[in-house]
Image 1 (cartoon, rainbow, N blue to C red):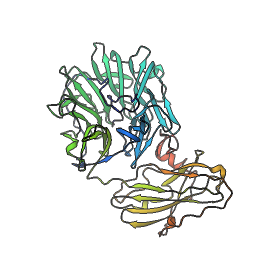
Image 2: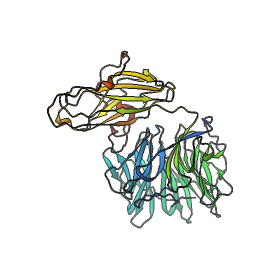
Image 3: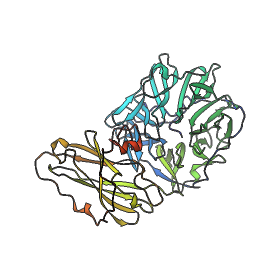
Image 4: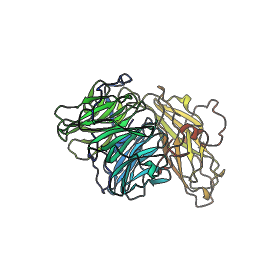
Length: 531
């Protein structure tokens, strides 16, 4: 599935969101054969729409989504700067808080690595901040995608100003990261899968632009697919590729390459619109992108291997929205992209969820600030909510963790829970302060996180891993411990036999559960990435 889009620009100017085709690439059809795409039955004919909001300014664009439903993109903040964001469980977080330069998150892996652009340079966003990758001697670069192993792709300028596709596993653009070209001046890498296969576009020796696949270190020309050029935007786990073919007339048609590199030209969303481009493909072979109804009138579409459909006709709560571009689709069929609301030119980021699918449960943190020393236990509440109901048998002592200001971490022990209403479970958790009791050395911000695949609803949908929120410790005197608010005690059910006492907090179980990830500076992180 896709983590980036070839036409996505670097948000270089203050207060400006924009989308345009900067250097996309067009090819030729060998055998026009559509490979039998192994795909699931349509999950739902309709979708529900979620407006992802903004970072306090005007406008937002959602670029990518992973299978945990974590969304990345960019939005203007209140000061008018375009800033990279990560969205989860209804909350949009700034990935570069406190940093004044423009940024954009372009791709997110299944394990939560995030890459994009910061101040005109390819970048990784992590709990430690932003790490730029440099260039091949030129002024700018961009990271467009990243796989579960943290291997990133993108393009970087040379000293002569040419763009060169790159792949890097350590975030350094040394000469060996340069993928070269198909004989021409420029190349751009747009996506990478977990097999390490890279797709993109390159100039040829004849001055054309062709889609390419890098496999086993070799750049393969995917041809012009019957036209004058082509571009590959994304590749899935089965090595199926999507993009477009371009013709002399300027028309662009959706194209899909099978794993054997045979191609099928699907065509256009509307015969009146000159361009239709595939921007992302999931592991079931479903493609999303945009197609024009007429020149410069884009509409988001989904293609299931049999039919291309305008998403604007499939959203049950669309209201005045006009969905312009579908940027990515995950393996649950969730789609992200950008659109506008009728009467406004402001670009908005959206998430579409198949309407027939019950969504995962969500958690809301109810913390309290610690102001007094001496307490040996800290309790906080979490409300778990679901459209149907929470499976309380999934609640336990290893669902929720707390990351200390020092970077150390611990699991929170489940104390009790109550069920005030259908679909609502109020749980109380507790931790022991870092040194056994609170003192002034513990001051700082503590982040409460939930593990992936921990708390589930009665349909087996698990809450998305990530941060539930934070609480602060600010001790300035030697007063006695603060009492636990009575509201947190609740009318609790007695607990059955929960897992044994905690062992090597988070470091062992949590890291094993999520492996090594990249993250962003909000402390939703342990062992290197998102949870």
